Length: 565
Image (tube, rainbow, N blue to C red; front, side, top):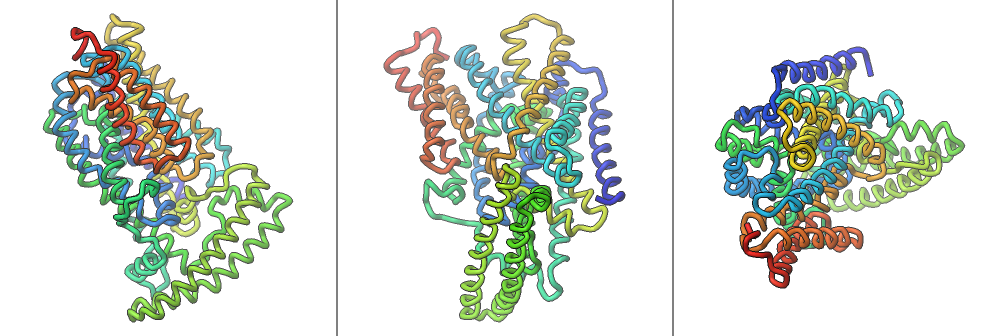
């Protein structure tokens, strides 16, 4: 990066970090440290919810996902608005009435301590692991740009967030989210504009979209009902609904965000606006990836987007073999570019015969490109012995190779800020759950507020270190935006099932829901291992299994009436 890029990057990050610490510098109580004193207006709640969900994975991996698989991933979010309605009607009033710190406090009153502890454990496990992925995402940036060892980049990326989250707590998280989302929005708009600017002079924005569409990348809607298809309308509306309902309603990283609202009305409005804004936001991020794809139809893309891995193979005994593959790749691209221009002209003239002919030729050439890339990944695997999936590097490589000085620093700041937002909320929620549901409830019940604030700081530090350790293994998981949602789908259905039993099945007692949850979770994990269905459906399966098993157990092994909530 240039000196100007470093200046832009450094000033942007320093501004956000010190602003968050400054706005939360007062003496903390447990309420202010964990819930920001429940003083936030609706727009803080909305932006905090969005910043928590929109991690660096969103801005690194989503454009790459669109580049390789098209825009069908947007269907993943179709269930979100419906989930927000249910949350506003059901979860917010119940949580608000109880004046709770975490979602899992409610479960002890309805069931018992072991059910509360089990649910808290499932959350801590899932959120701790997924936060490791969120830390790894920006580490890709520093590793690719500076050539640093990934271990140190993970430590730096996660450690900076530990600093201001430990000092400022939830108030620092909420205030930095506001700044982060503003900078992120500006940065992604700039990225989209710059991609269009780099297209050939005779190719317009509309032309680029038409070309991408004819090549299968603008595949927004798929009404086919297929349990093995990860992204279609039905998996998004049904599986996505249960995932989002569990994520926003039972995951403390999100519950802790809307509990900071100054009133139930502010919390509900914040959730509603999140439901309205999230799909357009995700659409625009994916659109940037599609535009990058269109750009590379007129300009030769790298054979492999992870430049660090390419540099390594070029200094290995396999350098000659890889160079030959690069030459073949360039030859295919030189044949492909005129065909892309021919397709563009045919689309402008609405010449269906010419469009069909160009698409057929391009499909054949794309097949040859995939064959060369497959050979390249084999060579890279022999040389590097590690990662051969470059989907997470596609957008980053474009930014580094083509954006002008200053813009590179801004876009990298955007990705780092996105990581900081989601990771900070995760640290805060992990600490909240650890202190409120375990330490304060089981280990040290009668300490003063100062002790619990100090314990919250130590819990934040512990989980930060844990998540950084998890980040060391994230490179093995392929597309991170899929990996983090698969991980959530393994647990969210079970957690949601527990809460739905608590809300709507008053005759089911604590023993039935406890064992029903354990059996249901085992079935979910087995379903994933044997690849029974696409991962989004695991959220529905887990939820239904918990309710079903809990009901059956209650019939055959009923709870004594005095213990039923």
